[in-house]
Length: 490
Ligand code: B12
Image (cartoon, rainbow, N blue to C red; front, top):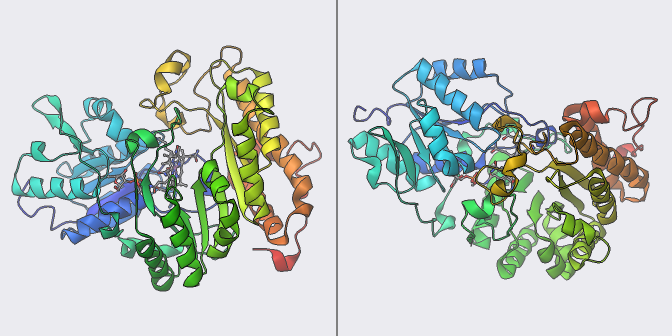
């Protein structure tokens, strides 16, 4: 690579043009990981451009056109398991357009599956494993200087006919010093659909996860660590987004923002004291909601309108304990507390383990109704090939097409069920849950009714549920959603 070759041309940071047809129906969500990497590149003097092909709903042909037009020096692609094949297609297109372009993949799937990717796909030059900010900058600097990347921690690449792996890079100590490249975001493209006209940001107040869910990737990715941004820095960032870019809704990307109670309370206090006035959406743990029962009015005051808690049950034992198990009751109580605090509650239920039967799934659907969140999602258990769950269910996996590893398509065949039967049960869950929920809309506060009304409409019109749930089991046509007073519509 010629000296200065990368500094003289922009680095294009790309999301693969992939859609699972779920969360995209509720909004357009910016790729925060790429923005953090772009921020670090800019500070090191590189030009960076964001190309969110996913949010633009671009086809691969349009991606190719963009690459031809932009002529980047390097293409950086962020891939989870479901998006990795399309991410690789982006690299292939980039190489076909310009064989000298540098192609780099990052995020969970490449971090673990580097061997499979690098062996099978010569169009991918480098994989950044783990956190990307420092590794990306070090890689580009080394390539420009003609230095050996072997000295840079956090990489995987091909060298002399084999796959070279450098040592893992330690996690960044100081999250406060990081700044995503907010200036690259075309903000008009990011909106939270239940609030028409809103400007939506994805933000991060912490990195890491200590939960032990065997089906998830995040504990492994973060090696059971957790680090927080300081409360002052985080709230100042929200204020900056509000004042500079007109952001009025922010989703926290954190696995567990509330893990450190003192910091979390300070964040809530600062949002209130400084009259942040932003709608906040987040995920947290059942334990933390129970811990913070008395603090929930403050959550609401701080702007939190939507909380996702993971109470999902994936095994027979948990389902067996429905009614008597303390954990199930804790989940139910956490959701009751969220509902009672005038906040939208959401959870999901994973179904389709090898030993599950239709009866078990019926019980999961009953469990969902027992928990009574405002929103429930019924997901197909998906064995990321690097997750703890994978070896245990390996024999029941029916496809290695990663595009189907999206929590929507069943990829495990239970002993006692066909895949079609699993699909049918997942939709049954949605239908039964939301048919029941709609009957309860009138008991909700007016703003929640309006939100639910708008969300149901979005799901029915835009998500993968459209065809299956089109009439929500009402043979006479789509159900009439409860009428929300016009003044309460969002
Ligand atoms: C925001 C989010 C989304 C957004 C995506 C926005 C976007 N384009 O990135 C939306 C809502 C659209 C979404 C959709 C889906 N998501 Co999602 N999502 C998240 C969430 C909550 C936060 C991600 C985030 O921003 N993290 C914060 C940043 C700072 O961290 P990061 O992304 O890891 O980035 C760092 C490193 O990974 C690295 N890095 C990342 N990319 C790159 C690229 C390069 C080149 C380099 C060098 C480095 C690098 O550097 C970054 C900074 O250090 C995570 C859960 C979580 N808490 O992380 C799930 C998560 C990533 N999603 C997941 C899933 C399954 C999905 C869906 C398939 C779900 C569905 N059925 O709809 C879809 C896929 C749609 C799609 N086309 O991508 C899974 C992925 C599991 C896996 N291992 O494959 C996760 C982990 C949730 C979970 N716990 O299971 N998601």
